[in-house]
Length: 309
Length: 278
Image 1 (cartoon, one colour):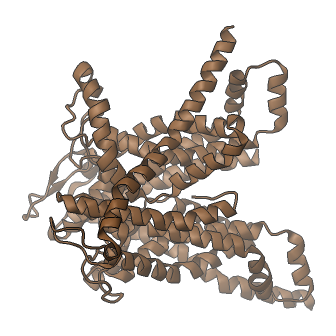
Image 2 (cartoon, helix red, strand yellow):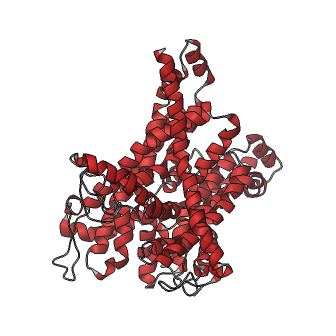
Image 3 (cartoon, rainbow over the protein chains, first blue to last red):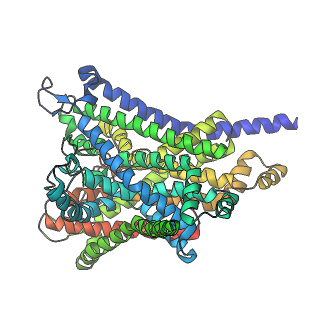
């Protein structure tokens, strides 16, 4: 009797709070649906070429319209890879430094600083990037390298404006370092003390010990990199203020380009006057949707598998 | 000897790289203050309350954007918080059910989801049918961004409560409603509140979800929730892209104000608790 009684209560409780969870699922599924439904038009017109060509022909005449977002996909990946390459050494160093070597009084302040960095509105990175970082990189990094090494394809583009893949990548690298670092830091902190003891007891120097301990948390480092990449590729406003917003597929770090998110941010406002542009931008968004989904699931999977070990 | 040299190089490089990792923060705080504070001082109180100046015509004010940000944060909290808190409770109460696990995974994904995609989505389902940008659309976009932060921290706070309290509450013969909402929520309130404040601080600084939903306004303070509205991040984004010098100054001033709002919410929370999930 008592069991049946509490059983019904449990059910009413579950049933009455379930709609709230369902609502979040509903929003997410509706979002996916909206992206699919709006992309169909351009897929029917161009097929896969929307992702494989670099053309952007906006025209009053729907016959002449043609959209290919390859340059934006290229730019997104290029700038995010630069970001991760920059963030990786910084975040690993920071994690190790804060856990093992920072003076104990400063430790907490170092972590607070990175927490502030992780939460700081991205538009503040954006304005700093556009007015401070870009001119700095242009005058003190890009031109000196360009003047001496322009025969190397990576450095072959004259950085006239400074807005470039490099600027976007550096800014993104700065932005995702705290995030990657917090994932690595947590894993590094969790390493059982007996491993540290064991490593030092065989006479390892601190360098050797850190090397061994880091190899122990390799999955967390990989997950940190993957999640940081996901964060970088989805970032919009800060990137769009420094990347140059030009359809351009160029190997040089100093060339301006586009990213998927900045393409959407720049073009969507006036897309409705064209027949197919809205659909093309939704298709671009759809690719970002799947990259975001895949990257996060993968990162979470790696992290979670570690926990169960 | 070789090993000791390596050790020295290692220690020095790790210290330098760590300092390099947080150096940008100080440079950003410094730059925003140096460029923004004088604007605020020069513009005086009018800078916080006035409307946007014309190109090349002084500083005016960013009052419209400030009002807009507060309205948007308020409205998005109204929409997002109840859903997020209850969804977080669901994930905590039924951690082993399929829906509970899925909810948690989905929340984690949404936490990292590109926010521009949310803006585009809201444009298509609200702005296009309504025919114009609106505060409501902006608030909905921000609510979607805010929900995972609040839900995840609610879930984590609920999970931290020792099982014995739950047992004790049930043993009093309370219904599950009362156990969860009266007893457990009371105990988890600190964690939940932290999540709510972090979520609010986060959306107050969001730009991308607002690009195609709030629409922006710079001359009229508030026209109703079905009409366009401004926001500080949106204003900064638009002004930075303008060629006018006074607009760049206003953008710095607005960035300084936004930074103060963010730090005023974030630092007290961060100092009170040990870990923050951003």
